[in-house]
Amino acid sequence: MNEQSKDTTVDDARPSSSTSSMNNNNLAKKNNANISSKNNNNNEEEEKPRNNNNKRSRKRGNNKNCDNGGGGGGGGAMNNNRKLSHTLSWALRHSAVDIGLNILDDGYVPVQEILDSTHPRLRGVTNIENIRNVVDTSDKQRFKLFERPRYLFYPNNDDDENEENNNTTVVKTILCIRANQGHSIKLINPEKLLTKISSDELRTLSCIVHGTYLEAWESIKNEQKEEGGGGGLKKMNRTHIHFASGLPDDSAVISGMRKNCNIYIYINAIKCAATTSTDGGRIDFFTSDNGVLLTDGIDNTGILPIEYFSHVTDKSGKILLDNRDTDDDDVSRK
Image 1 (cartoon, rainbow, N blue to C red):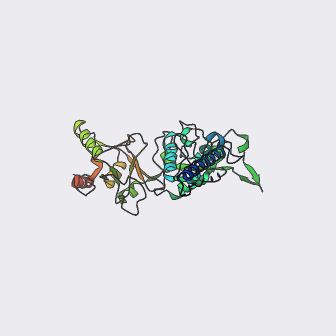
Image 2 (image 1 turned 180 degrees about the horizontal axis):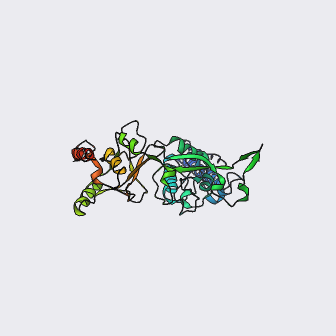
Image 3 (image 1 turned 90 degrees about the vertical axis):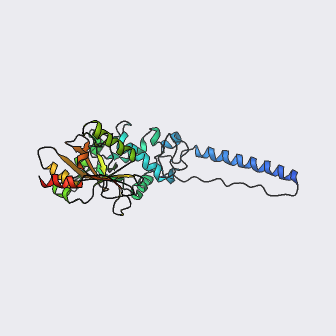
């Protein structure tokens, strides 16, 4: 976890003016030769390990931009937080198991395993401070750092035995990171990653809205017609369907939908809560640490049928579907 030292930058050499064209040409050639020499020397220095304690430095080559973001795709060092955030999201939400990272069912992965990974998309992630910076500055609070007991990841490691200190057991911990939501990894347990919303609390939620696009809305409507009422929101390759507690321009909303969504699907929270309390089906809702609302659909099918939509609008506020009168009648009869 040693921090990488910053590279020195080669100053541009500029040829000076002269009244003699011949002198200008000769001087330009000389300066160009000096620049080439300096650049060659600088490249040679970049091939050397930054820190003798960091065994990955030589193998990973030029880590010049690590201090500006860390992380990378295809082996290149990342140069900003956005790229590092995308890489961490890819690893923690979707690919941890496939690329050999230890991940618990609550979503946590040891930070050191990410730093040590030789996978091409993680080769530029070499600096823990860059990871901390992404976590701290994420506008949607996508990630969380937390100390977790080491034995949970390495139960058979003799070095992980707990220590006795003044007759008190001290559990060895390691720094871990997780994505707060958005997973497609099947082993994730929503009861451990998320906070379940009770039926009573669900009834009090003033806004549950799913952001999507016109093409997706047209597809939902077509499915509703073609499959005899089978249209609705689907979790797709994720473990849950995602919702926000308001629209993107609401300052209280941290995350839950993309800002460029042009279709808003509002959910009838009272009807969902009523369904949860009956024997005819169950719709569980959860909330993440960054305020995203989630459900895995009715009876854990991954589908929330269109009958649970309150209304649908486009970005201008135009009503595309309105079930509010029907919803009120249905709920009053229960």
